[in-house]
Picture 1 (cartoon, helix red, strand yellow):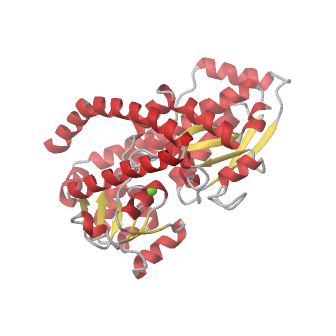
Picture 2: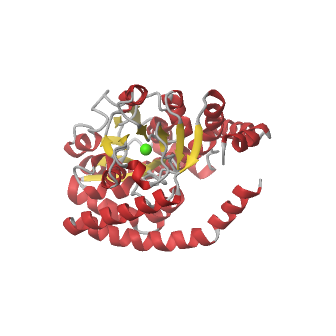
Picture 3: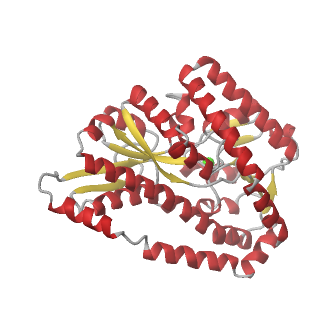
Length: 382
Ligand code: CA
């Protein structure tokens, strides 16, 4: 889809309609079922339940209201469902610990709970990638299906327990990310050779295999690096967060899709000793609040990305392009090779990869058959 097609849809009111719906959903929130209200009342009246205050260490600046919002939803829902007895407050990156130190702090117990992306810690253990996203992996729906119904969460929780003494719950998803902002055209895989790109995680390791010069810069330094030509390209998230970062002002091309993050999960991580000390009802409330944060964040991104993309295309002379098939094929081959290489040296990664691939192949065949056909038809029929 090019600029004109997208803005044409925006002009038909699709964009405005989606925004209005998104805002209405935010304003009203989900109505509490009578049983839930009764449960909250019971918790409030139960004098045996302790008053507890926790702060959540996060990896996010306040300016990223969608992703920081996942931590806030979690915190606010736990507080609300316990009538304020279990009071949790989300803190921005750097307030309690550095943005990339969340898992370490939760593991040590210096903070009881964090909200972060597990793949920030692939340097600690490659298997953490499965908790967020693996290149050419799962979409948001497929990731949720694997985690909640495909045995993925049990598998990952077992790994976290043994390796870090931490228990984690999915608590947010950005949906499929964009490929990002480029000042060089990518017409073939050879155009990636020597490309200076900011891209973290396993996606960065794949780009490295393809000959790119990979950099991992914190969010606050990317704009200037792209502006001065210190980097040729950067990935970030998608239209809503990218608009906040202002990349459209300093890049010519906006490529898609972000094959390294087709449906990345964020998660709440809790020190296992701290979790085990909680009353069972608080543990159940934590699971429910994380579940709510997980679906709320995805819905927010899906609604907010539509008007954000329209704004980007109106404000800047940006050309949107899909990665050519040859580039996708070369990237996928390099990704498969990387996963096999890691698995050869890492038994945890190997055993999770086996289960994950079986589930992925099945659900992608199913979605490829039915849902993808529907979306391809709809995408091409307007
Ligand atoms: Ca990203």
